[in-house]
Length: 626
Image (cartoon, rainbow, N blue to C red; front, side):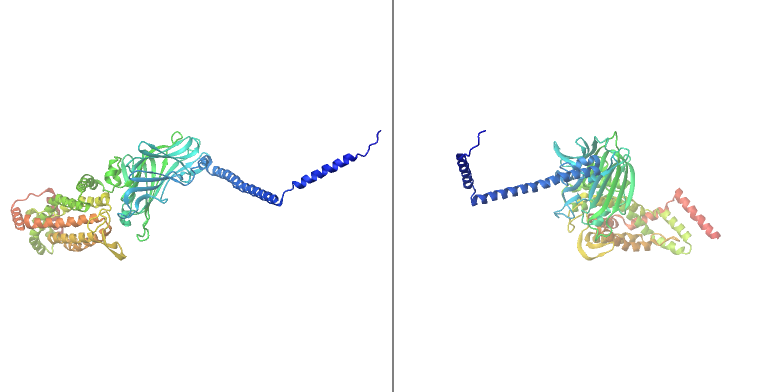
């Protein structure tokens, strides 16, 4: 074996290579500037990584949060949790409007949360506040859904998906409460140009296995009515819930107190606010309905925002697992002409009076007043002309009433003689007085009959003026609103039953009625004998001369100034007619001659007169026997 020898050349080569490597390492060492730059780059890289970590962390948390929210929604809403996952599941509104009405419909609940009647001012003209029937959550429209997984859900708490479109000139909004892509409960609104009435429908699709049809599907419509007129007491008096049922019958809840009622086969429900109204109409009658009206005005000085709280509860029918109702909403003026033109019995919402009173208003007063006001002379002058026509039409009744009073006045001396002659025998006095009336051809009740004939007209007018939307915010002389009171002075205090202001038209009407009653009552006093056991009517009439004007003064102070204007002009005209009849038409001497002529003619008793005479004779005979 050859012995290994030491290789000197190898050692030298190793040393040279090591030296070269060491020199290269030294020469490639970074300078202080390079080290500083590298440090900056590393720091920037580190900060970038930290930012990425910060950004990534909320995203991860959001995903986890969404997942938790979905699970919670599913636990609370079941299948309808799908609606809570949609991008539209937030509190936003969709607006549709035409030239008379603006509506805002909320995603949450899918119902109207703002209904503004365009072109009409709140409280007074040029108030810069439009009339709003719905605003600030004063309304709710809710359907209670019992689901197949034993949940009770309220649509007013759930989010609908809105879709806005157009059908010709009509604006359409569909609101869908979804249980899946093709499973939903839908509200559909269609607003037409120039219409206060909009189409509305409720239908379900694909919810046969979601809604428990063995339990009722209850709809509740609630409205807390805002004050829109100058006088809250006057507005509240005519704010009422009206409904139609059983094929055309109509009824209402008492506006003066809290009240409830139920009805079957209901076809419309109206929440009427004196001058404006909300109406829900249905083509498919509600099988039953419950109505509630709560008065919210206990103190007129404190309760100044709302008037009534209305609630209507109706069960919806589910047919073949589906809900399907075609309806209408009306938000607009409570104006007879507009409501009547729909030909759906909506004119019954107007408080025109029942029976003959409503007939007079519908077929005489409303057309006549509409014709007069269409001339363009202003509504104050229209009321004056209307009053003149009414008084002319009633003048024959006034004439007969005065003639009767004149006859009684002519007989007054003879009646006074009988009263004195038989003052100790009331029965005989009455018997002889009736004989005198019979001979003279005078009916003591004739003066009352004309007054009774005027009562339907009086009551119809009392209902007519509060129902005249056309008078709203129309001015005349010092009155700036003929549909409300005409204040000429605001009192620093409130007088019970009277108010805190002074209205001038009621004062003028009270003065006119005072002189009218003084004129007519003066001719009636002592015209008939006071019967035994009966009050002295002459004394009562004297008292009424002062009480009636005072009652009018207090009662009409808060009423429509148009009504007070009517009574003021009416009483003035009546006084004028009475003076003309008294001074130029009916002469007392002619009446006296006619009475004397009647006395000389033989009289044939009617069955009623004969019966009355016999009864009085029997009573007189019984009194003598005693």
